[in-house]
View 1 (tube, rainbow, N blue to C red):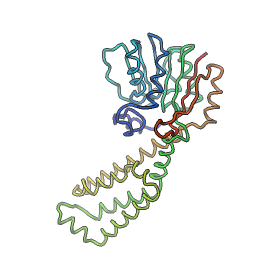
View 2 (cartoon, rainbow, N blue to C red):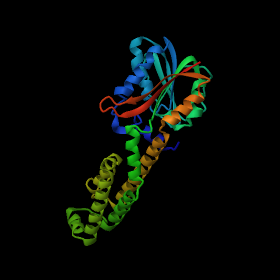
View 3 (cartoon, rainbow, N blue to C red):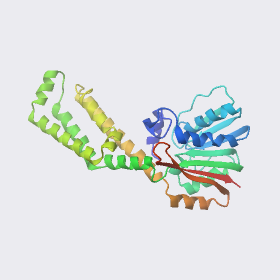
Length: 315
C-alpha cells in the first residue's frame, strides 16, 4: 500500500471517510460493533486489523467500559498511525504501525476476537483471513465489515476518481500555471485592474470558466467532493496577491493533493468485495471456521448499501 495512507492518518482522521465523520463512526456502523462486545469474556484480548487511528478500538472500549470488563485492544496497520492517549481505565488500547496483516507478529490463539472495518480487504483476503484465524483462540470470533462493491461509498468514490483522473482536471491545472505566469506579481488593486483589462488574461479567465463548466456538467457532485473548486477559489481570492513563487508552490500542493486523493480512492475502489469474491473467500476458510453471519449493512436513512458484515467462529 502506498505511503499516502501515512499522510492521511497523520492528518488526524479517525475514520476512513475523511471529513464525512467529524468524530467516530455513528449509526448502523456504530451499532454493529456495540453488539459484538457482549460475547467477550470478563478478561479479554482483542485485535483490530487495519486499524487506522483506532476508530474500532475506541468504539469497543466505549461499549465495554459500562459492562465492567477489562483487557487490552491491540490495533495494527501497515501505515504509520497515531497512538491514542490511554486513561487509567481497565481497558488499554495500543496501536502498532507498519504491521502487515498477512504476517501478524502474534502467537497462535492469542485473541478472543479479531475485528476489522474497511481495512483487511486492502490485503489479499484469502491470505489475511487465514492469518487472522491463526491468531484467534478456539471458539473465538472474527468480525469483519468490508467495502461492498456496489455500496454508496464505492459508487461515490468511483465518480471522484473518474473525474480527477480525466483530462479536464489536468487542463485546469495547466491553465492555472499559465495564468500565474501571465499575471506576474500583483501588489495592489491597480495591478489587479491592469490584469483585468489585459486581453490574454480575459481569454484565460474565459477558458478557465469553460473548463469548470465542463466539469460541472460531467459530475458536479464529484467535483465538489474533489475540493478542486475550493483550491481554485483560494488561489484567486485568498492568494490573489501572493508572490508568483508562492502561487506556484500552492499549485504544486493542489496537484499533490489531487494525486494522493486519486491513489487513495483507487485503492479503496479496488479493495471492494463482490458477492462472488466473498463466497469464494468464505469457502476457503470452511475447514478452520464456521460462518455465523453474513449480511449487507444498509444506511438507516435511505436504505442504501453500505458494507458487508461477516462473522466467522473458529473451530
